[in-house]
Every structure is written in C-alpha cells, then in structure tokens.
Image 1 (tube, one colour):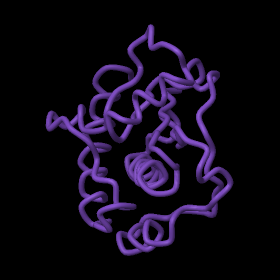
Image 2 (cartoon, helix red, strand yellow):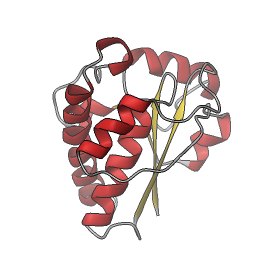
Image 3 (cartoon, helix red, strand yellow):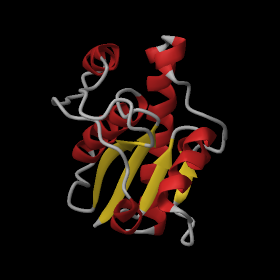
Image 4 (cartoon, helix red, strand yellow):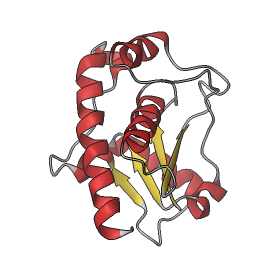
Length: 153
C-alpha cells in the first residue's frame, strides 16, 4: 500500500483538508485498497486541536466527509512510514527537515509540484480564502493520484 502524509504548519487547515479530499477521491475511484493518507503538522502550536471550523465548513460545502480529529506533529518515524511526504509550502520543508534531519529518499515534495504550477498552497488561516485553498488542493491531489497510479501501482 502507498502511504501519503500531508503536512502543513498547524495541521488544522490545509493538511487535514487535503487528507479528507484525497480520502474522498480514493473512495470514488475505488483505490482505498492501494493508497492511504493522513496529515500532520511541523509545529506544536495546534497539537490536539480539531480541524479549524471554516475548513470544516468548506469541506461540507463540497460534500467531502470528515470526522473529528486531533492535530499532531510529525515524528522522525513518519519519514520511514510514509512513501510521500507532501508539504503545503516551502517553509514547511525547512521545518520538516528539523525533525527528519535529512531527506535521503527525496520524499519531501510540495503539493503544487504535481500540477506543474509550483509554489505554495495558499494558507487560509491568513487569507481567509478557503475556496482558493480548496481549489488548489483539489487540483494537486488529482495530479498526485495520477502520479501514483502511473509510477507506483
């Protein structure tokens, strides 16, 4: 099974949105047997907190199921456990490397790398634009799933 971990700063907006969007797509494409995903933070700021309410509202608007969860910080063992470590912005890479120490298998990638757009996923905590973040995540996750189907399945 291919394992994907979405990573952002606090694990209350972008990374859990990505987790639930991907889980919904995997269910729709009947790929849950082959690919799983989870999410985590680079910081300790929101550890134990549930997803940010506006993120939940956006997922609900889009018909994406989710459940109550608790934010967690990445651990060094996550590097070995997951095949793909997908970060939302460049700043997250620097912070992830503080925990992982290195990236010998080149597992750390940015979400938008899969769309060819490059750059960061907009942080709705600061922008308030959950519509834009959802659209960017949707495009990125569709491209990621196609990449995995082409290269790993």
